[in-house]
Image (cartoon, rainbow, N blue to C red):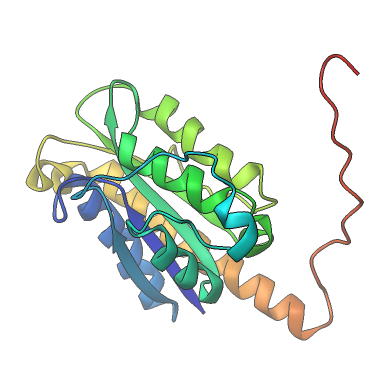
Length: 206
């Protein structure tokens, strides 16, 4: 089993990375393979609604989204990490995930997901709420810890000093590993993801 961790920070070895590494170490202790996928160091486009992905399954813009999609096909779980900017997740990770998830629910359905954020002081819960919505719209079990999945600090060294935050990351890693193992055991005993009903789409005027 494998968990794909997405680092949406422009700092490849910064605070968000430090938090993700703590989760990854705990996953690996429990026999789960991990990979950290870095974005944020180069421009990431928002969706331009061209419809190209409906034809090929891939985005027409080559900025890492298609590489992530290929890796997502083989992953069993996901953790998305972002710094907090203006009380929100980073612009890069928001644009990236909008395009990754658009029309691709089948890649993620039934696979556990969790969000992790790092911040200096505030905006963490709003950012977590923003990232968790990708999981919730795609039928993904959302993995929790012993508190909200956040760390605090201006530097990686300060994040390591956030003892509670680092414990939350370790607990998240153990919880993710446990759920993945439960899902795998269930499949071995013939328990599959619940049958889906045909989608009913409505809006507020009909």
